[in-house]
Length: 314
Image 1 (cartoon, one colour):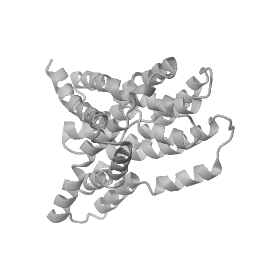
Image 2: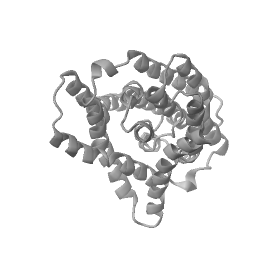
Image 3: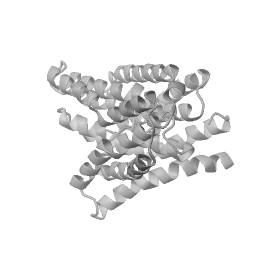
Image 4: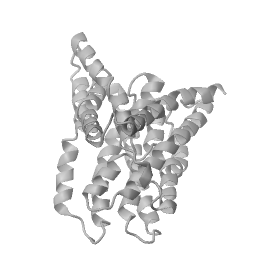
């Protein structure tokens, strides 16, 4: 019971904050324009600052773990391959690109950092997981949505080139890179800079969660129910069941294991809908999966954390 309460104390406040964003939009405090701007603000400023601060203040020579980075990259790649194979069973196949993207692409940055902060007080090994998975998420999302766009059978090279450029200028990646360079050079972290960055970084999690909640649309959840349920199952349970035992076998524990749990089994990111809509897809399937995975991940993530806590791994 103590382990269950411990896990609930970690996950429930996060999802209540997320639902607050939805509630605020329903009562008119948030609108689509405000939510979009808040999403962009969190993505461009507080979240990169949070990652920069956490990495800059650690000894990167001691914290760097190539095994962790390679493992996260490998299982993300395998997850994408499995999603592509599973999508062949969809009939009709017009949502194939959306299915693939939504089934592998996690809210690794926002939800991952929030949960690890609740557990350990900082971002822990989440930056290593983000380095290994988020660029791959973005590149493959463009490839998948281009190849499987209704009426198109080839990759749009212009879109792919623009997205590759976007990855290298991604604020989250830049924040991680800046923090890594700061740590490598062993630069001092003055108190004024620490306090200022800390105040800004504290806004990342609550604002990011409320913006995510404000982006949810319940009316689109059941447009393709069977496919949505299958996609949600793979996102929250399937990949976790396949790869979590392997992660444990490889010796990952504590914040490293929590990072892998988040990467494998957190909700599909709202960006799935945004990208699908802007790349020629209808988008309602992505919106529905984001909604379902967000709601049910409150229970499934608690379960995975509970199991690992019971085994003494976190």
